[in-house]
Length: 301
Image 1: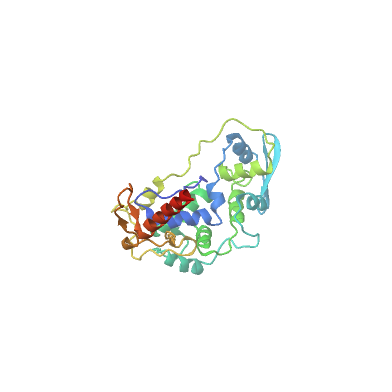
Image 2: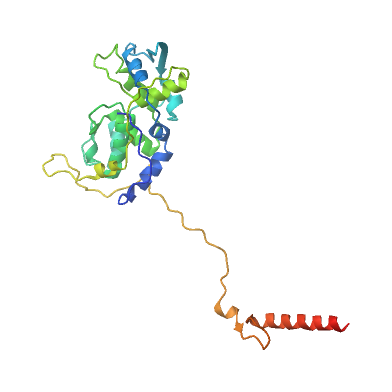
């Protein structure tokens, strides 16, 4: 699907997701989630219709609007800004992954696969974001492979993970010469890479009408399972927020270092005859009288 993510404050009633949104906006996936370019339909179709590669290749070659283009792992790294390295892993052992899934209140068996709906709704939201916005899945958005689960837990725990290679590998299996049933995969990422790498490509008019994820995703993630569904989250464990998506600490208002006057510090006294306004405290009254005397002396001189 490869759509842009919803990264604004959660709607009323879903305030517990504020820390999730803050985490998504500050984690290494943030740029790849939020970028939402105008997607040129002709560019995407040209790229995949003309794509060539052999199994094990490190470059996908193609033609877009008659111009030779290519995409490799490093291009993905340079454009999507995952902050990863070519030597980082793309998969962890199921035992290591399961340790984190347990903290995420997962109620399923050891992966693979990881059943998305058996995660606590808070963490289910993160898994859904990864599948819909970053993975190459066209369908099958209810399960994560071990590779995809590794990607999700890595962003939570801050583990090294090669997201760039993971995306490239997903692109490679979709190349026309390797897959007769290829489809127009990763439209957002392909558009971003082509724009960056080939700024002089002819601009075409026809565009994809790709809608961004909106606030309704919170309602969908939290909807209750039907009674007749055989896989259902039981809410057996309390939610634990941790890692990049820990509970955020709201900043307390800054204290103002000011001394507030008590009532007895200022005394309003009645003004003597001939004075129109009340005078605050006796000191003020005495100063006024002294000034009057000085004026009278000056007149005498």
